[in-house]
Image 1 (cartoon, helix red, strand yellow):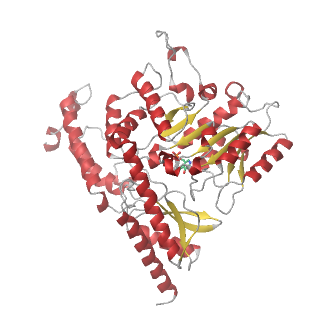
Image 2: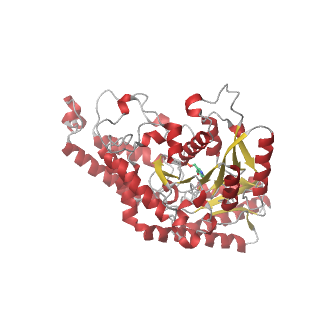
Image 3: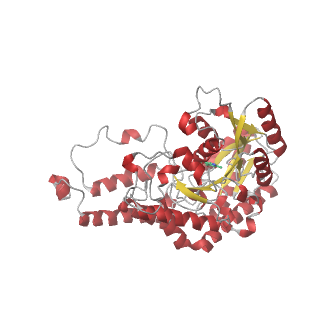
Length: 491
Ligand SMILES: Cc1ncc(COP(=O)(O)O)c(C=O)c1O
């Protein structure tokens, strides 16, 4: 049988893994698939022409009983997986916030997989543990934060903020780690303050921590979608008067909808005065602090207790990699440390750092490896050049919107995201325009709501995006608006 002769012997009657030489051939073939994909990603529609439920039935109902050759599996990958993906690697991906997997980042992921580290303890991976400390230090310095910040790398900003808020709760002296918070008359309702524009991950963190969504006080924002400090003051005073216990303020540096920046220094002042933990969510915009000339909006973030920045957003690192910086590692540890005998290091004199003591989960990926490889391949200067390019592309797009009376910009553009709408149309018209543009397959945009109005978002952050893709997006938008107008006017 032709197919079975291509099976690896290990597949036929072996008890061990793929033979190393077969692995070499399979991995080379997979690298060819990857390189072909990246070389020609533009031939795909950014969002595939599929409907919900159309992909699952393409796959068998049950796993195969008999082994299959790797060539067949890779062929199916090309046939069934690649074309049905949303192509985040496509240069026309201008939706949400870009997550690009850079070439060196992908190489890092491959090496990470091959080394198979579980970085839960120093002992289970000395190099993963110590390189994580090195890379955290490199990134901290690159964004201009002082040496008082230590930190760790987690999977996502959602986890980073969860950890920060758990630490904030411990720092408030509640001993939730030991006693829990349910059924304790001695523990008042705990409160976390964030702007109405803060990311949903803050509420989710509070849901997960047993504080509930009700614990999140959404402070009003001004016409620029920035938290109003006076409203924050009022909210804290009101809660204190009601007997609640404020524990943390979350300021967002680059909100998800409009990339607005909360007044960081004012929030830091209030947190200091009120004795609250100050967490800064810079998941998207944090990398901009690599650019010394753009650090204005960051002033005051050095006073935070914790800061989250996502390399897997605007530092081109393959998902996942979120950097949680904090001055208060001991509070993180108080929130999550639990060391059963089987995890104790008993044969080393020096103190060891076991990162699992700072996180809810035990097993940890060696994420520092891809960051180390990437930071060296690009160099900080290379990253800065790309960030400046993205900022410039967004500025150019915003200028086109501003110059065209048929279009309206809905928010300032402090970074690389532009929120806008076709001024001549309704919310439904704008949704239809975005849909038409996305159906072209050439670019992919997403939306939000600002001041209750439908806003189309164009976010530059993909490593492969060039000026021509942003220009094409503008052309497609105007064509779609023209078609909408023509239809409405019965032309
Ligand atoms: C400001 C902000 N914070 C947090 C997140 C959540 O990020 P993650 O998907 O890494 O949890 C996002 C996602 O877009 C975000 O924009």
